[in-house]
Amino acid sequence: MSPRSSLADAARTRAAILAHGAAVASVEGLAGLTIGRLATDLGMSKSGLLGPFGNKETLQLQVVEAAADVFWREIWEPVADRPAGLPRLAAVCGSWVRHLARPVFPGGCFFIAAASEFDDRPGPVRDLVLGYADRWHRELHGQALRAVADGDLPADTDPEQLVFELTGLVLALHQALRLRQDAGAVPRACQGMARLLGVPVQPMA
Amino acid sequence: MSPRSSLADAARTRAAILAHGAAVASVEGLAGLTIGRLATDLGMSKSGLLGPFGNKETLQLQVVEAAADVFWREIWEPVADRPAGLPRLAAVCGSWVRHLARPVFPGGCFFIAAASEFDDRPGPVRDLVLGYADRWHRELHGQALRAVADGDLPADTDPEQLVFELTGLVLALHQALRLRQDAGAVPRACQGMARLLGVPVQPMA
DNA sequence: ATAACATCCGAACGTTCGGTCGCTATAGTG
DNA sequence: CACTATAGCGACCGAACGTTCGGATGTTAT
Image (cartoon, rainbow over all chains, first blue to last red; front, side, top):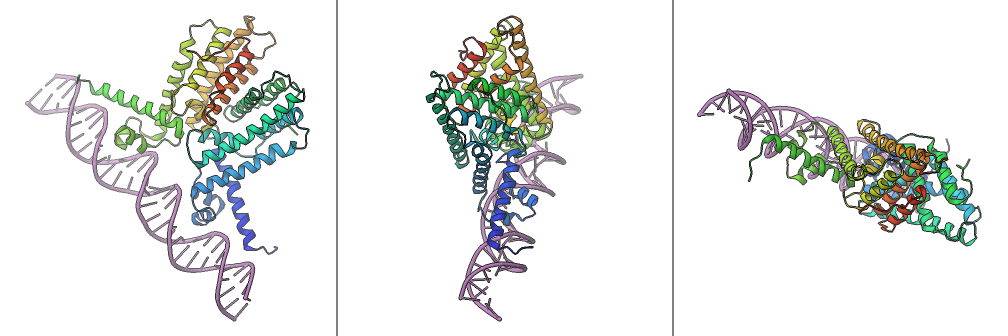
């Protein structure tokens, strides 16, 4: 086929490692990620796989970053053009629900799993996951604030409370889909979000 | 000291293993439970620790059962004498919140962690965790049904939806406490529950 | 053509994993 | 007092863990 530079090959190898790593970690956990397992899956040697990263923790951190890219692209970007405030907030909820209901990662939402796994394990991985969680939280909070300022939500709405409850619905949906395999939870999550926001929410097409 | 039978000693050893195992698993995960780690912590040999259980999976299963006992005793039993229906439902919510806010296990709620860890890993451990989750879900659902039948909740209340949203608030509280270390989430969870139930909810004293 | 370089492999390292086996020390039983 | 049962220990096993190292291979630049 077309000749490719070795530099481009390395980049694609790295991307393949991170993509597969995120997929495996969504099921087995980030700590359950194994150099040997990854190498076998990708038909590589352990040393060749570890090469670009140096050690396992660096690999874990970059897997988290790669998953964050997917998360952002999957959920936020499709709704970034919606008007700020309530419209964008309702849209991101629909987008979020769709992400959970779709087999993007075999183990469901990478970040819900990673957050639960590392919530009590201090270290760089936890710090990184927490950083992304904070960023996400602030993003939602900002839209909620704007929605109140615009008068699209009741003036006595507490944005912090709203984000808290929206997050809860997402977590409940994740657990229902993953543990209980109850697809009926999708409309339940949407209904709960709609009640909180006062506008319909449906999983984005 | 006082002489004890070897049978009683064995039972207490077993209980100590399971208690410490549940504590460690709440932080490191059930899969991260390690025979050697447990043995070192308890000042035992690996073989002596594994003896009563035979293999690791049996140990894991019995750790789950031991944690379920604690969970039941911590959350359900204190409110079992409340009148069925809405009073008991509101009480169990308060009891639940208190459990999350208290350092019962060093890693927070054992079952939330275990459910997230094993939601995508088929096998006996998942089956057992799912069984307890179902039992818990049915218990809440029954009380919600009763509350509607009693007229303590609006007639158009969907008990399934109610349980779903209550669970979401608990999951959000767990994440806020553990990952974000935000103690302000406790009143937020109570407020959400109170809004769902129409009666005040406060963490049981 | 050749030197330089990057990519990746294969083999080995020390450690830890879950698990097995035989032994000792102690408690209960006749 | 002997006899049996059992709780737990210490030594050990093969496998897998993360990591290191030197070399084979193939692309890029001179």
